[in-house]
Image 1 (cartoon, rainbow, N blue to C red):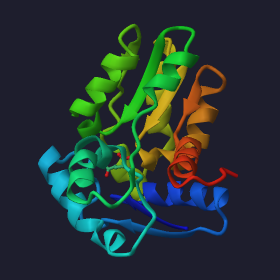
Image 2: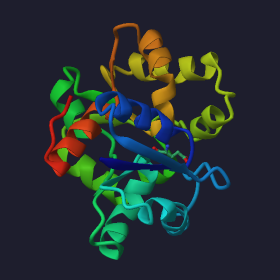
Image 3: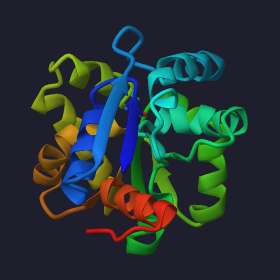
Length: 217
Ligand code: DGL
């Protein structure tokens, strides 16, 4: 099985590592766009064209599936990519509003994501579909992807954000950017039982199994 994983930067490597653990025999190729990361502060059309260009090696590499391990690229590009490459399977990643809506008891959740994801129509549709009855806090994480990419995000910055959303009553925190997977443990530690932290690695693994009709391990 050949899986291609795309992200603007190191978020894809976190997703690829989880997939490799679930499918030890899979051949996984990760491609990122180090030249243009972060995508999260770019316009939808820029993200679309950068994604299309950067993932060409994966399109040409005969992958059974390409995982867009990037909420930002999924939000603005996945439909166009599916139409442009109809014989290629794509799996995208979206903020886990639905699971969060089923878990929350305070009806308050936090979605940590890039500005481009939060501004996208797909995200707004998700909120309309599953989050109408929720109070959704969207804290300013606009610098996080850049800082994580450059190993510069410090604990104090994350602490301010996480403490703020917990104080406002969020009992579920959705990681809507794959870069943040790298700081999941830190966020769990700061939340300290006040909120559950959701990210989609396992769901992606299950989606791969479903799509390719194989067993999820
Ligand atoms: N890791 C990406 C995401 O899931 C993109 C972050 C960025 O490039 O701004 O949204």
